[in-house]
Length: 125
Image (tube, rainbow, N blue to C red; front, side, top):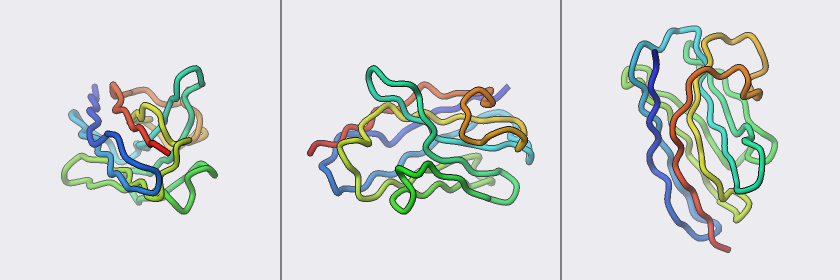
């Protein structure tokens, strides 16, 4: 069993930066993929970024490519999302998630078994 707890959300102005963190408890196997998703009011939860736990391969949604950076610290069992040049459209609840295997689309939330409770990010324009 894996538990995920996000932190680092807040209210910022457009153009600012935020760094989200996700602390994982339980055993994160080397086969895992860790990801960030977000959900704005009235919309579907959408993929933001993912990283393989073993070798750090990364995947990004087109909407955040070049602005967001996902990273992990295996020793600390932690996942991070550095968000730069934030826009009002980035406003959402951000969720940390884990899938047990690399197989399957990294961007599909159906493959992710474990989820955090989310942290709110609000970007004012």
